[in-house]
Each structure stands twice: as C-alpha cells, then as structure tokens.
Length: 413
Ligand SMILES: [Zn+2]
Image 1: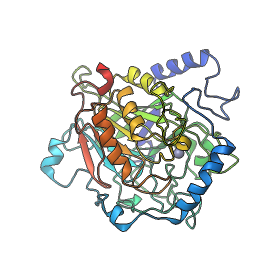
Image 2 (image 1 turned 90 degrees about the horizontal axis):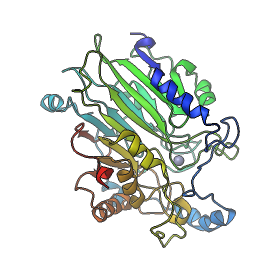
Image 3 (image 1 turned 90 degrees about the vertical axis):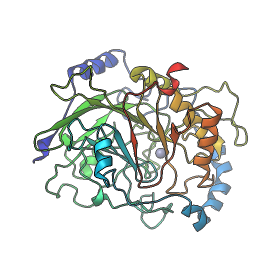
C-alpha cells in the first residue's frame, strides 16, 4: 500500500460551513486580520499578571525538588497494552464498540467501531508523547514518574495523529526519520493552525499535515484492510488555553479539542448505522477562580464553547477530558480544569461516558499526584453523574464504549 491509502479532503458541506464562517469577518479568537496570534475570547479567561507569577514562584521552586513517593506512584495501575485484542471472544464482542487505550497523561489510542467482522476500525492517536521529560531538553524539565506503557513502535497501525496544542506534554515529537519507514502508510497529522512550519521542519509533507482553525473539519478515508475502507470526519473545536514552546511564541499557534465522528461506509444504511462520536478535550480551563482556597462563586463566567459543542453534536459516546494539573487554582484555573470543571464540561458537551486524562505522568503543578481521580469521583457524585459514566482507567488499559445507547448526560439538563 502506498501513502495514498489514506485520503483527506474537505467535503462540500464542510467547505460551505467554512465559507459561511468566513463571511462573518475576523473570528473573535484572532488577534490580527491574519491568523498569526490568538486569544481566548471569553470572560471566563483571565491573563496571568506579573503578580500571579510572583505568587507562584516559591511554590514552583519547592515543587522542583520534590518527586512523588514510590508508594504513591505504585497506586496508578500500569500494564502493557493489548489494545483490546488479547482474547478473540472479546474482540468479536467489541467489534461494534469504540476501543480506547490510555497511554498515560493525555495520550490515547482510539479505534472506531469496525463495520466488517475481522477487520479493524479506523485508528486515531491523540496527543502522543513518549519522551521522558516534558521540556525541550531530555536533561532538564519535569521527568516522568510513570513510564509510557509501550514504545511508539509498539502502537498498532494508525491512520491519524491528532494534536491539541504545542506544549511539550501534549505535542508529538516523532522518532528520527519519520518518513523513512516503509508500509504501512504514514498517518496523517491533524493540528491547530500555526503549526505548519513545525511539521515542515520535521520533514512531514504538507499533503500529510493538516492545520485547522476552530470549527474547520475534514473527511478522512483509510484502508483498514486490502478490500475495506473506513471513513470519519474530524473537527477542531475551541477550548480555553494558551500555547508556546518558548518566550517568543506565546499565543502564536492555536489550541483546542477535537471531535471525531464515524461516517457510514458506502452502501451502509445511514439510518441503521450508528455513528460513533468521540470528543478529545486536549488541555483546557473552564472558569477563572479568584483565589486558591476558594473555588469561586457559582456565577463565575464559564467557557461557552463546551455547551456549543454539545448543541452541535447532541451527544458523545466517549469523551476524553482533562482532570489534572489544576493547583494552585488561582493561577491554573484559567488554563487547566479541576475535576469540578471537568464534570461541567462532561455535562456541557452531553457525553455519555468519559475518561479523565492529563494526570499520572509528570508533576506539572502542586496537587498530589493521586488527587485528580479522587476529586473526580467526589465531583461526579455531587453532580449526580451516573456511577461509572466518568472515571479513570489504568495506564495501558483498553476500555470499550458502546455506540448510540441512551441519552447524553447533559441532554436532559
Ligand atoms: Zn498545555
């Protein structure tokens, strides 16, 4: 198979929706007439001031010398991934389900349901980071306290690599000579607008790197076997965050989340085919709380993007939502959600099931490494989320999700 085995195009519906958006002038998240710098266009965001950084500094310095205890790290389950394929009976049972394997932090391999017995579904790898340190250097910067559960080479054949933003904990740096590997065909890369030069510098041809603005969408069709193809639509959606790998490129590339929606195969009855819908939240804040001890009044403005996503897609069979790197709250809340916010996002987007991510690999902030899943359980109970609907899994574990069953959590709210 050649690289042409994966096709990416903008459908006429996707193109006309983009033309409609362009008619209404400069989008509110563009700083200039051209998309060269971006902002969070909502009152739910607050920029960090010099005073914020001064307050954070002593905490950050003491944090730099502490690493989590072995006992705490041992509480995070870690296994070699089987990608849901160890038991043939389970493989058959799960063929029509979404399979998600957590590879630590914000990295997930998602396989969409297969439409033909014995043939794999389309596979998407979200925010892959396999390096030890999350920094420009492998000598300094936060070091992993849990290893990736496998090497990048052990990940099964993938069709798309999807990146939420360019921070070191979530943006893929490919292994050397990414274009030298023979078959299978190299996956296409989807990333926010502003990253084209980065992929160019890695030697990834522009025909394989797609940098999108908020709400832009593409259709991907891939060969899942010699005879079978699978298609999905992928849309870049807004979130509340920032970008930059150094001091000169802050806000110069965009950030956001992604929606992936399976498209029925040619000849498949559209009415019958349940279309899997998956949401990946990337890295996002939700509100900006006024102090670190107080989670803030109930009427703080919240990021409106998530309700809009819920309205557009109606529900999601599976969502990946960040739950960690939130303390101290006053500093982190504009850019990282705490479990209370994660549960609000779960409801706003109308997800049926979700897994928490953005925890369990690096100490990026001041909360205890085991706190995010504990707080998530508390907040789910408080918000009346059905038991087991939104939780966490072990690193390397594969979780399956059925498609199109029941209402989304927020849809009745
Ligand atoms: Zn980030």
